[in-house]
Length: 415
Image (cartoon, rainbow, N blue to C red; front, side, top):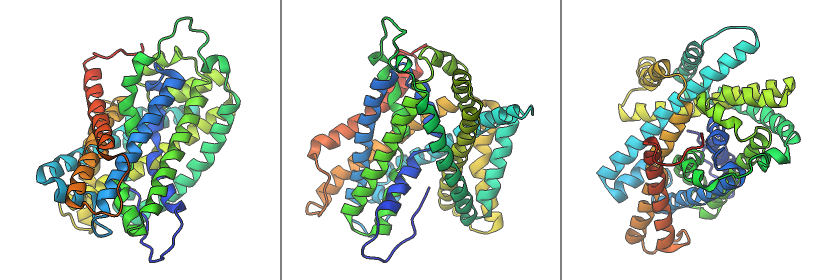
């Protein structure tokens, strides 16, 4: 999980906080969006993303509201334990651990598939299992070395990701075809029935809530600055997701996504589909480069967060042997999962969305409700009163219900 260095300045720029939130949100999970949203297609998907953005922004503001009643530096864990009690704190901790583990597995799966695709373009036959495991061991070594090593590698990878991002999207948008984007080839299309299926993936694509205490620690009790960070960072993410959907759904016909999903929906399948439709070698190289950097940056961020969480949970020391124990506990379970089931990227992102409903929607709403009772004269309060708390709470519950129902094939699926 990314952090900011504490500043003693009374007046600091919000740009660093905006970039922290945007950088935390935007990662390899964005590759799942066009595939899972192909049923709802472009405009309905934008509506789902916008609604999710609204709810996730305000759930983050609710954490901020509670956090400002405590000293700067108080963690999400501290807030939950003090305001909601040990049981909710345990549930919240378990949901965070599950999300971090399932995302680590997702990125091992994603890295294996995209590295296999990368190597095949170089006429090298490397299996996805071998590539994913090798990449996971490399990340494990970097994380084991030190947090400083992770930060340095992440800075390099993020720079490369930003460059390839703009080059890739500039090229993609130049090839958008209105007939494909508007799906004119389908004489009687149905979109709305598939919207509910997208919600858990939308929720998983706006996760940043663990960074709110970091912003309070950095900016102090300055709610105006932190609100601007949350609004700006989440809006950047929403805008880039909209551009990503425009670039993919404006180039790949809707019915083609059925085959992409049937093949597991992993990153390499989407990249191959874009490359074959556009028939551009340069764009294919950019897509491969961007996807590699996107997976690497997400992988580093998530595994460092899981590593630190487990080290604190089990009180492992910061020596080489202690970090080795933590690294083993961090990487061995998801590596084993990826070896047994290498193509579970889409499923993993969906389950991450299910677990994230606890700490990104349900718990923030409960924190705001409890905080207002305990601190009735608090100087900062999220607008909307009880109706907004109920909306965020219901948003979380509906997301969990949607994922469970879709797991039993109760909801309509585009296939």
